[in-house]
Figure 1 (cartoon, rainbow, N blue to C red):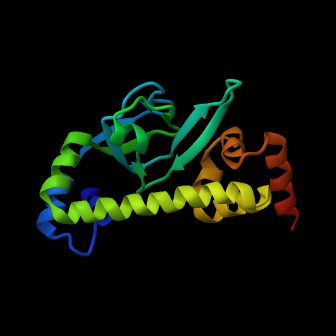
Figure 2 (spheres, rainbow, N blue to C red; figure 1 turned 90 degrees about the vertical axis):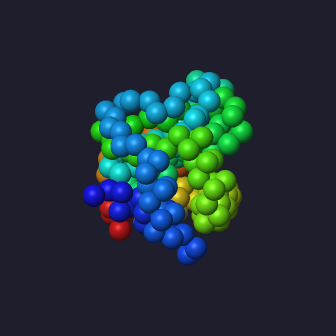
Length: 192
């Protein structure tokens, strides 16, 4: 039963079983088809999801109208657009299902209620957000300091399912390279 996995995602040292039950209770299971949008540019996000099954991608359009991947979400990850949900502003990103997906949705108001009532949820939320800030900073630095081949190998190590299931054009934009460069890197690594 997936709510056991939800309990693992929200697990935190001070979180009691009662706390976890209250958190899990607020989630609603949902299914989406490949290509379904979870969030569209210009909308204000009012929820976030835990991804049970499938792959989700976030992307923006650059100044030339090119589709640029900003993130990939895999199983047991939180699918969220942080700026929009926490600041109640229209998002610049689109969030789309790359495969058929099963997700657990929690409305922002329900999460805020839990955040206010349960100190362990507050602690968990701060720890999660701090980790996300670290990952965002690391990604920004990696885009500057790592070669394209190193960024590809890092993605291969951290999220191999992306390389198996996502279209190459989306992977290339996420890595900040062209489709041609990605093909060259893949051939080079196979030749080693």
